[in-house]
Each structure stands twice: as structure tokens, then as C-alpha cells.
Image 1 (cartoon, helix red, strand yellow):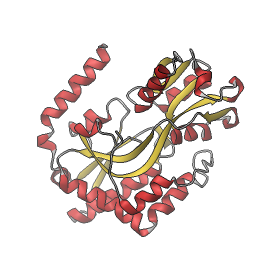
Image 2 (image 1 turned 90 degrees about the horizontal axis):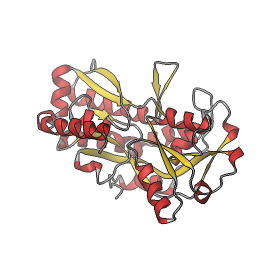
Image 3 (image 1 turned 180 degrees about the horizontal axis):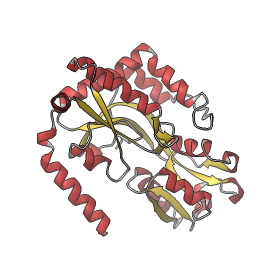
Image 4 (image 1 turned 90 degrees about the vertical axis):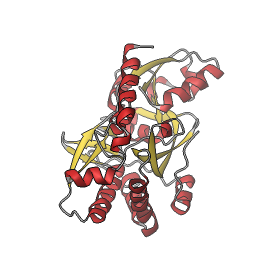
Length: 295
């Protein structure tokens, strides 16, 4: 086990020890008159930072609706909101430890994570693919045999593609990245041949690149994964509020309008178009309102 892995486990273990005391999120928020919401710095179009200090994205808009629901439930129109940046490695232990109260970003709702945290109704369905440079002529996973592939450390995508590589004896080599911007930087600099992430994040990387025409997303979808907002376990009151806020958006049609705004319209900072219609799985979940995790 690496020193960084050991440190992460120690941090998560310590967080779990205090989780019970932090379970009543609404009371915690009421006592401080503050809700702390985490964000990702480069998860376009879900949660990202523009001009150094403006946090925006589809998931950010969902979190705003949830914060409004908290204000209404607590009768606190003056409720303060604090924002805390997180990454793939620290988002779970920091939530469990009570450093923040709600994460709506680009986190996959799966069984393994469900042992430590709870998830809301699923609000997106993504699948693992790879982003490559067009000039390299890579059109399939087979073309990555023996080549360097980057993925954000702690993401599910690395495990999925590693399993595919092992099963097909491709001997791909792995380069961990600290975040999405770092992963794309490795690709743009020619240090890796591909970035493996959820397909929508790859489309976001390409759309916001200085030269998007030089990159393309390739490969079959290897695994479909639901995204959901993340909150502490064993807090049914707060989960019911979060689910109720998301369900209200879905039933009213506002969710579909937000989706069109972020996935089918020009988005900041470059007014790029992702041109991604709503998937059949997400359309179905507007009716079923499921929080079913990926296996």
C-alpha cells in the first residue's frame, strides 16, 4: 500500500468515527445558520470554476435548488452558503467528517461508496470512454495497447478500463491525474495517449479546450454509471429533503430546461456546444425517480 493510500484510509477511518455525531444535517445547518456545499473545479458541465472565482454548472444549479429547499424547511431565508472545493480523493472522507453538507458534482452512485455515504435520486447517467488526439489515429481501445492512459486518481473509470485492458491483454499503462484539468493537460502535452473518464466529462474537456477540433471521444461505452448528489449516511430527513427538491425539479419540467441549458446550448467560458441529448436512462428516471446505484 502506498503512503498516500494509507493516509487516505486513516482519514476516512477517522471520519467514520465522528459520523454519528454529524448525522443530523438539518440541525447542524440550523445551529450554524450555514450550509456548506462542495464543488469540483473542472468537471464541465457539472461543476467548474470560471474567471477564477465563479462556480457554475448543471450540478451547481441543482445544489441551488436544494439550498432553497433547506431555507424553506428551516424558515431561514437568510441562510448562508459556504463553498468548499473537493477532489476525487478527499470528497468522501471530508463529507463523512462533516467538513461540508452536500456534494452535487460528478460523483458516481455505486454500491461500494454507499457503504460510507448516501446518494440522492440519480440525475445523470454516464459511461466510460476515452479522449484522444485526432492526429494519433486512435479509434478503439485496441489502439491503446501498451500506451499510457491517464485517469483521475480515485475514479471508477480507471478500474473499468484496467479490467478491459487485462481481459483483452492490451497492457495499457496507467498515469494517475489529480483532477480533470491535470488529466487533460497530460493528453494535450503528449505525455499520455488517452484520458479515460465518463463520456460527458470528456466532451466537456474537449469543448473547453483551446483547440477542440484536435481531440475526439472514441471507444464503446464500457459501463453506464449514475451520477447523484452525495450526503452523509443515516440521515433520512436530509435525504428526503434532497430527494424532494430533485423530484420537484423533474416533475415540474425545470430539470429538463436546466439539462437543455447545460447540455444542448452554448456554455461558458467559450460558449461551447456539447450537443448531448438526454439519454433514455435519464428520461426514464424522470418518471421513476430512482436512486439505484451502479454495481
